[in-house]
Amino acid sequence: MALWGSLGPFCFTSLDMDTLRARCLGLYKSRYSNLRPICYFIPKHESVLERKLRELRQDTQDWNQRFWANQNLTFTKDKEEFIISKLKSLGLGERDEEGRKRTLNAEEMADFYKDFLAKNFEKHSQYNREWYKRNFTITFMMGQVVLQRTWKKLFWKNAKKVH
Image 1 (cartoon, rainbow, N blue to C red):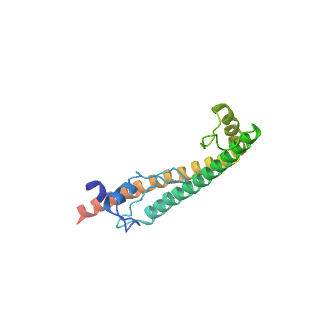
Image 2 (image 1 turned 90 degrees about the vertical axis):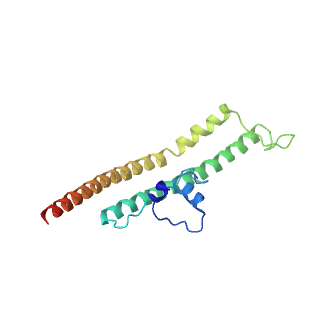
């Protein structure tokens, strides 16, 4: 229960406690992005800097979820189109005689993976640049928060000694 208490308030209100804990501990992943969502604790006396940091972290998580959901959707669609096209070029239907979906071997799929990566190189490069930029900013702000908290503690201790 101590772990639960440290997680703070959430937007999930109609879920049972076990489901809520599992979601906020990242046990469930998004079926579209394959990423695990994170719930951020909101302190009772959150400073402006702490709020900005939390909002940036949440915004970064949302941006990351959107990117990978879109990327995975594109990948799945392009892969399916490639398989159908390749099967047609081999004179085969989508299903075998027993009704099972046909697949391609690793060597045949290697062409798709190579082309997909080449086609999306610029998109992945832009994603990586933005990811590094966001993480650098988050790390810098985390350092500022630590300094701010340390300064407040030192100031508060010194104020207590004076009185």
